[in-house]
Length: 420
Image (cartoon, rainbow, N blue to C red):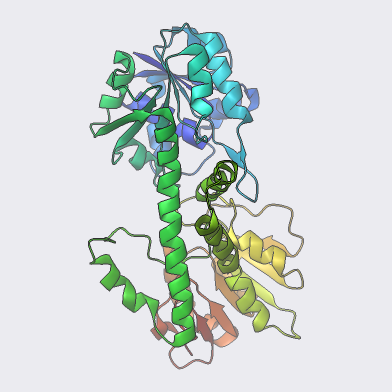
């Protein structure tokens, strides 16, 4: 069997490589000739554990293409470009539309086309009505865990034009490769399921951040509360109950914006979802607020550990680090990240290659991305930290309270008061 995957950004690269790993022959298609050339020469330009090894081991089953005629021999086509978003989470669907049209033009009506990019309800039906045999499949990849989640999904969610389970044999054969439950529903239900998943996560994240903020104010310690919540079966051991700097990464924000737009057009009250958006914006300012409060009349040089919006990825979409640097233009920042790179838009920040260099040039520190290696590196440089830093903003509590024992350095953690 041969599968064509259209769009070679994060989503398309992951699924095309995993499909080749399953033994299918794959046409990896993109109209960007420079991107395809870079992939041919250097491999994937995204950081995901296991992807490089998988890329090398599947060479015999993959072919890169910019000529859409290569798609005509495929038994199944998957449209999977990443959907760009604005700062407010507004989706740019132009690339998904363009590649879906190419898929339709490249094959006859017997070839199933699966749209996997994140689209609003009604998007897939607009193509399915015209051409038929067009389906929607929900993807739930996580940056930094994408290969494992693609190969071992919790379940598969498929939308058909009328919710019928009668899907083409070739598509069903591909789905069965993943050996998990398959939920089949109508197109709009599948599209809304993706939004629903992200809104449930947004609810957990927003509630956690609100309670953590209250903990800071009343002298509670959120880290003491989390174990009790995880043991409640209605919440569970995998619940999103770790406080964070708002909602970042782009995907959840996209669905908050999509829901708000749909709610406005269908007279549905959006007040709950609006509160998630507002509180996320509020909590993203936590680090800038803490630095600004302690810097009145003092222009600081601040060390920032971490640019990516979370460990395990190079993605900086809606990164709290970039927001913080932008808000505190009167300060200078020295920044480090193991894989993410600082863009050139910030004149008041420069990136260094080592944590030791960063510590030698700064008088305060913010640990914005809790990369595990940072804990060990800071422990090795403990004396320099506690003697030279006025304060350490450590939102995720990467460092234990004992690290600061006997020092006057303030330790600021989400969900609890300042520890001296």
